[in-house]
Length: 208
Image 1 (cartoon, rainbow, N blue to C red):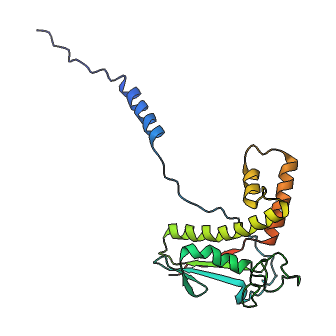
Image 2 (tube, one colour):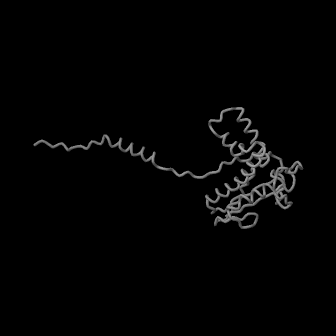
Image 3 (tube, rainbow, N blue to C red):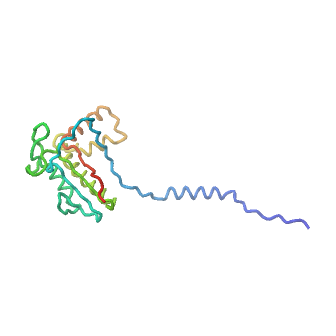
């Protein structure tokens, strides 16, 4: 009696089905994006150059502990109040810059106990090792928001209400912005505003 042939399962299309399922999951799956910070590090000082002495009143200190609590200028503060506190510090204009010039565009209280000039004002941030990443990002956003508020104010005053600093930055970053004259004009205007309120956020060493 002849040996029966065992029926075979046609698996030729299984690879195609698996491939289609893979494509389906890739197309329909939502990937979580991590928040990040774009920050250009300052250049290293030349050798042999002594860094300038920073007065305490020109230093705005922000401490974040392991419980995500904020201590700003040695006082407990809510995150929602951080931006305005930074604006008040940066815009104080209580003295002069390195050239002995007063801040004619500052609208702060001009208190002699706060920052002398936006060019001298430095924001120092220090986090605990157990500080949540989300809190770290939120603190940075509030501080950068303070700079953007002041930069936008001066850009609108100097160049018109339709030409804020953030709008110029957005136009410059747009891939369809290819006009060389426009690009140069925007860069020149943004440099003027950046010189008025230079972003100086110092990341102090993380505490244990």
